[in-house]
Length: 319
Image (cartoon, rainbow, N blue to C red; front, side):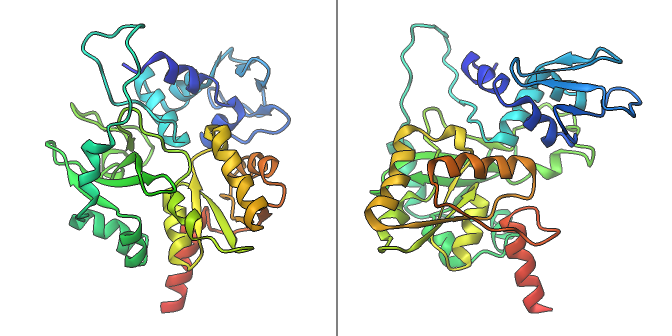
């Protein structure tokens, strides 16, 4: 079962942002109701209580209820979908005797550090990184990406998170077979083993990605902020220095101070290509509040994120 704190995080996600990720078009706190044949935008969102209600069919609830009803998922699968789509860390550690008084277990960096001393990429990982994402091998080497296969045959890409000094502080495990496990309508294929899209070891700190690049920054040099590791790899492969964050809401005060300090100390300029959707623009505005000098760049029509733009630009050069 998911822990209570994670479920509470999922329930506190902005209801309208969740609706937009589900494909609903929200205008003035309303949208067409997906639960009946609606033509007059009868689904209303209350941002104060973070809930939705349809005054025609009486569908109502919070963020998790909306995912459950929209995608026809049960409670655990709806929570995993929300966690995957918003990069909220779902803890993997499960104590045998849960207790409210049990102390939090720290991230065991020594246990995982050896995995990245000699990175190994499976054929599935190479296909994902070099054929699908068209990444520069030097970037993959710099980021120390590695891979592994679990006992059920699921292929995983391991992405290490380091602090500025190069100390391992977290790991993101990406399910490379995730697309094979879902149908086109996003409904999961029933199986006795259906792992999520992402997994994080217990205690992992995965807020700002690629922090070691901070030590390499020169005065007044531009730094690109991307949404997620994949966009960061693409930006690095484009020849730019970059960091990534999963969500502005996950940034700690120390993270914000670090970014502001770069601007004050080195005159660093910040730049961003927000994802072409409402959550992407919302993320930019949240970061803009932290970094007033953050520059906004518009992605070309048809590109949903910078990774998409990067791949399409390479394809266009070779055709």
